[in-house]
Length: 161
Image (tube, rainbow, N blue to C red; front, side, top):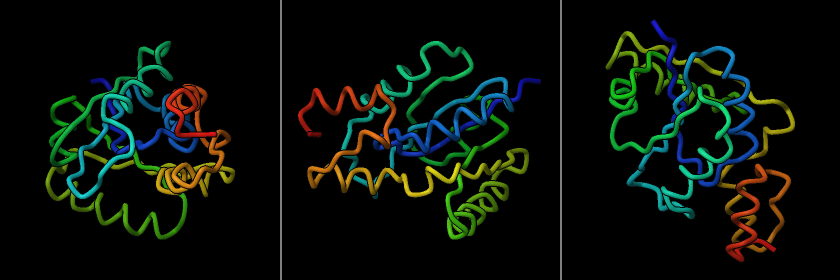
């Protein structure tokens, strides 16, 4: 049986914090599906298509990585892609408390799906998509927080300086 893992998030935009978690999770799984979740409570800065394109571009040379968009419950997406694991990145203690509650609910819904937590490297604890968007909206330079593929697109769009 393959070890397939879903890494859900909005990835708006994809940051070096995201790629750090993905890269460190790759040796643990046979396949890693990056799930770009559609959240009705969030209005993304970047289109779903753009976020999927970034992930596919960053990992174009890694056949273990796939990107999908999904609606609804994360455990339902797990069923659709055949994942028995959910990957979550943890920056701070309060992230763990929040993520554990979600993991407990997911396990209540589907007891065969395990949530795996990876802590981010110290240099990425302050790299959150929300903060990156705020800096971008206010004309700041976010290039050191983003993969090159994301930086190139943002520069071409004229959003970044």
